[in-house]
Every structure is written in structure tokens, then in C-alpha cells.
Image 1 (spheres, one colour):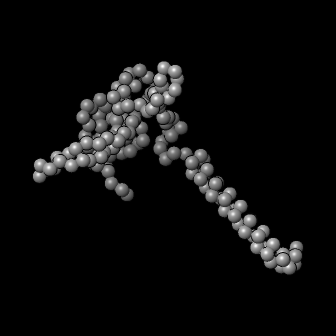
Image 2 (cartoon, rainbow, N blue to C red; image 1 turned 135 degrees about the vertical axis):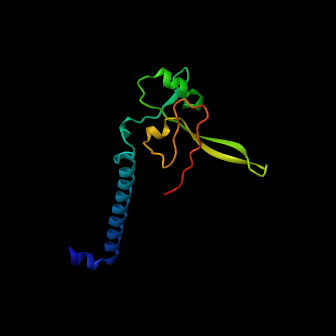
Image 3 (cartoon, rainbow, N blue to C red; image 1 turned 45 degrees about the horizontal axis):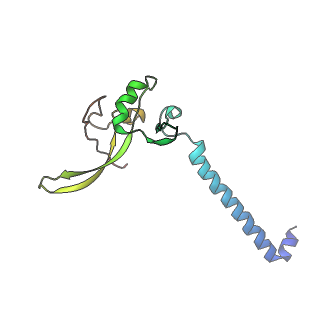
Length: 141
């Protein structure tokens, strides 16, 4: 077999390139599937975390739960251990020099850090039902 491949170098090159492309594609697809489908999420009790949405009258999904709906979510579904919501909001902030500037921020509800088991490095987190929670500043590790 080796002699045949050496006699026909063009055919041998096509075979080797085809095998290399097939193996590369297979390994790439498996890597993505392994990261997305097979590995568990890096949170405790990740099998119990679900994404909630809202439904219209006809049963079509209209979107995610709004921050204003969180208190009723707690009251209407006592089977929930905890519920968390993350959202993006834009606003204006006034600096110490009196100049306003636009600022985007991410907001989370009071049980966010509890659901994802994120400990506070310093200070306290949110208290349940706190209307205007503390500011949490994060940093990259």
C-alpha cells in the first residue's frame, strides 16, 4: 500500500488533505459540543437553574421577565427557592464637577448573588425586598 501511495504523489496528497480536513472538522465540532452541551454550568445546583419568560394570551412567548414583575414572581410561585434577574439600563450621572454624562449599567435583583453563589469580597450584598440596593463594584480576575 505504501508503494502505491509513493507512486502516485498527487493522489496521496489529496488523501492526506482530505483526512486532515475531516479530522480537524470533527475535533472542532466536538470541542464546541463538549463546551456547550456536555460540561455542566459552573454554578452550584446548575441543573435547577431555568430561564423564565412571559407568554401572551395566545401562548406565544413575548419576552423575558421585567424587573418590575419580580415581586409578583416571588409571591405567585412559592416553589421557587430563589429568583434572579439581570438587566441593562442606561442613565445619566452627575459628576462631582456638576457635569452630567451618560452611563450604562447592569442591574441585578436582590437574589442574584445567592442564585449563582457569588460571595461578596467586602461589605454586604443585597437584602431581600430592598427598594434601592447597594452598588456592587466588580473587577476582572
